[in-house]
Image 1 (cartoon, chains in turn brown, purple, cyan):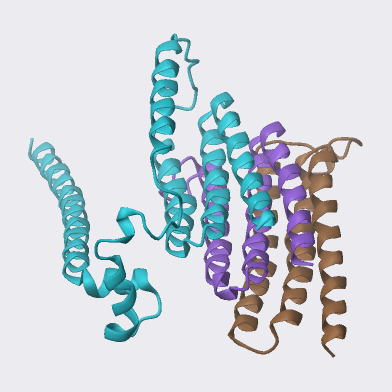
Image 2 (spheres, helix red, strand yellow):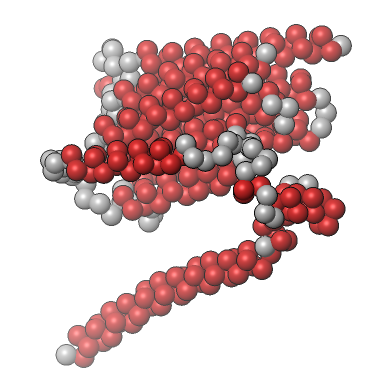
Length: 106
Length: 88
Length: 192
C-alpha cells in the first residue's frame, strides 16, 4: 500500500511538474497577452491540482489534507477570475491579438 | 521525489522571472507575477513536506489569498486610475 | 544538507536577479510589480531558514499591504513620467561603501545557530526551558511575545489601535467640516 501511494504521488508530481514547465515555456514563447493567459492558466489549474493531489497522497487523512484542499480549491476558483480580469482589461485598453485579423470581430 | 518537484518549480520560476523582466506590456508582467506567486505557493507546500514540517501550509494559504488580492488590486488601479470607485 | 544549500543559493540568486532588474526598471508600476515578486521569493527564503513568523509577516505586509499602499500612492502621481537624468555616481558610491562596511562587520558575527554565542547565553535558556513548563505554548516566539513580554505587546497594540482611531477620526472630521464649509458657502451665495 505504501509503495502504491508513493508511485501515485510520483505520477502526480510528474504530471504537475510537466504542466508547470509547459506553462512557463508557454509564458515565454507565446506571442501576446491573450495567448499567454492560456499558459498562466496551465500553471494555476494543472500544476496546483496535480501537486495538491500528490501531497494529499503523502499526508493521509489529517488536518494537513484539509489545508491542502483549501489551497487547491482557492486557487481553482481565483485563477479564472484573474485571467478574466486581465483579458477584459487588455481588450478594454485596445490590445489586439496577434496573427490573423480578428481585431474587427471584437 | 519532493526535491525533483522543487527542481521543476525552480526551473519554471526562472522562466516566469524571465517573462517578468522581458514582458512588453504591464499585463504580461501582472500575469507573470501571478504565476510566480502560484509557483511559490506550490514551492512552500513542497518545501514543508520536504523538511518534514507540513505546518508551513498555513503560510501557503495566506500566500494564495494575498497573491489574488494583490493581482486584482493592480488591475483595478490600472483600469480606473484610483481605488475610489467605479469611475470610467 | 547540501540540498538545503542549493535551495538557498538558488533563492538568493533569484533575489539578486530581481534586484538588478529593479535597478533597470524605469516605470513605477513595473517597480511595484518587481518589489512584489521580490517579497514573494523572500518569504520562501524565510521558510527555508525556519523563521515561520517572519515569513507570515513578509507574506501579509511585504507582498500584500505594501504593494497596495504603493499602488494607492501611485494613483496620486501624474500619468506621464519624466526621465531622471541626474548623475547617480555619488549615491552608488555611498551604497557600495555602506554595503562593504556591513559585509566587513558581518565577519565578526558568531556562526548562525552557535549555542555559545552571547545572544544565546543571557536570558534565552530560561525562555527555552520555561516556555513549555511554565506557560505550555510549544512555539517559543509566541510565548515570549504573548507572555514574557506581554505588557510590551499590550502597550504596542494599544498605541497602534489609538493611532488608527485617531487617523480615522481626523479624516472623518475633515470631510464633514469640508461639507459644512461648502454648505455655508452655498447658503451665503443664495443669500446674496
